[in-house]
Amino acid sequence: MTGTTSLPIDETSRARLASDGLRMVLVDPTDAAAHAAWFRAETRGFHGAEPSAELVEQRRASARSEDRMVGVLDDTTAMPEVPVATTVCWPAELTVPGGRAVGTWAVSGVTVSPTHRRRGIARALVEAELRTAVAHGLPTATLTVSESTIYSRFGFSPAVLARDVTVQTARARWSGPEPAGRVHAVTAEQLDEVGPQIVERVRLTRPGEVSYGGPLWTRQLGLSVDDENAKNLRFVRHDAPDGTPDGFAIYQLIERGHDFSEHELKLNTLVAVTADAYAALWRFVLEMDLVSTVTAHLRPVDEPLRWLLEDFRAVGVTETDHLWVRVLDVPAALSARTYLSPGRLVLTVSDPLGHAAGTWALDVSPDGTATVTASTDPAEATMTVNALGALYLGGVPARTLAAAGSLHGDVDRVDAIFRSPVAPYLSIWF
Image (cartoon, rainbow, N blue to C red; front, side, top):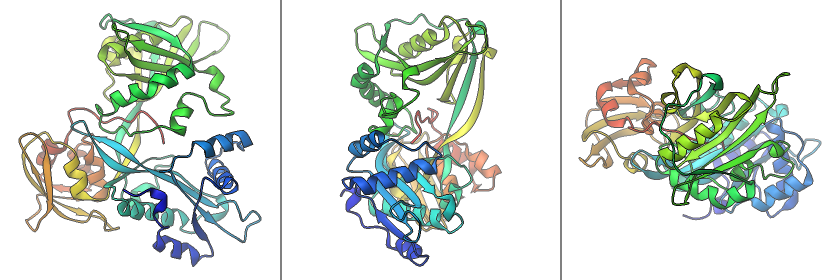
C-alpha cells in the first residue's frame, strides 16, 4: 500500500465544504506551525487544557508517517490558521476471530468547533475518511467514541463491549490458583523496553484488539510532556518462572476520606500473556495494604476475576460500548476471520453509503476459513451494515440484532456461524 499522506484529499467532501466557504486540507507534521495549530484545535475539541510548547513539539516529533491529519479551515475567523474541525486516522491491524488480523482505518481526533456546529462538517469529514479507507484498500474502519449518538448514521456499530470493575477488597479473599513467577516494581522507562512486546504477544489472542504505539503507548506510560498524573502512576511487571516478562500492570493510589486505610487503587492497565501472569497481577493488586477499593476501567466482558475469589459479589461490574466497527469491503473483511460452523450462508447487506451493499455468499470450510463472493441466490439473512459491523467480531448475538430490527432471517444459523468462542476485547482508547 502507498502511504496514507500520498492519497489526495477526498474530492467529494472537499467540494462540499468549499461550497460553504471552508477549506479541507492535509496537515504536514513537518510544518511546525500548521501542526501546532491542528494539535491545539484537536485538544480544544476534547475540552483539554491549552498544550505547552514542549508537548506540542513532542507530539509533532512522534507523528508517524502513516498518521493522516486533516483540518478544516475557515479563512474568515479571527484565527484563520487554526482549524475549525479535525480528524486523524491511520492504518492499523484489527484482530478478528481465529487469531488473525485485518486491515482497519483507525479513526480518531474527530472534532468540530462549537462556533461551526450544525453545518455538516462532521459528516463531510467522516464520510471522507470512509472513502479514503476504501481508496487505501482497507476493508474495515474502527473508532472508539466519546459521543455514542453520532456514528451509527455512518454505518458504525458497537462490536466490542467493555466493563468497569469495582472490587471491595475486604470481601475479595483469593480462592484461585497459587501463581508462580514473580512480580517486580519497575519504572515507566523499564516497562517501555518490554511492554510493547508483551502487548503484541496478547494482541492476536483476542478479537477486537487494535495494534498501537506512538503517542498512545506514551500516554499509557505517562511519558507525555506535562502529564500531570504521571507522578501518581506505579508500574509492576510479571516474569514467568524462567524469567521471561509476560505481563504488567499500571495503577495509581488515591486517598479517600480521613481513614488512611481506605485508599482506592485505580487499575489503569493489566496485560497478561498467561493465566499465571493474570492471576499473579490481580492478586498483587487485590492484596495491596491500606486499600479498601480497587477500580478498573475497560476490562473484558468475560473477565474471570469473580471466579478467582471466595465471594463472587465482591466484584461489581457496569458495562458500556467501546469499539465501533464499520465494514467497507465485505468479501475482504469476512474472509479474513474464521467461523465456528462450516456451511454456506447467503446474506444481503443494505448500506446507504454503498460501500458494503450487496448480496454475498459466505462459504465456510470445515477448518473455519471462508470464501466470500457476490451472489444472486436468495438471501437467508438480511441486515444493515450496522448489524454486520456488530456481528463481525463475534461478540454480539444475531438474536439481539434481530430483536432490534436490524437483522432478519435465519437468526440461529447466523449465530452458529458468526459467534466467537473468545469474547472480543479492546484494551485501549484511540
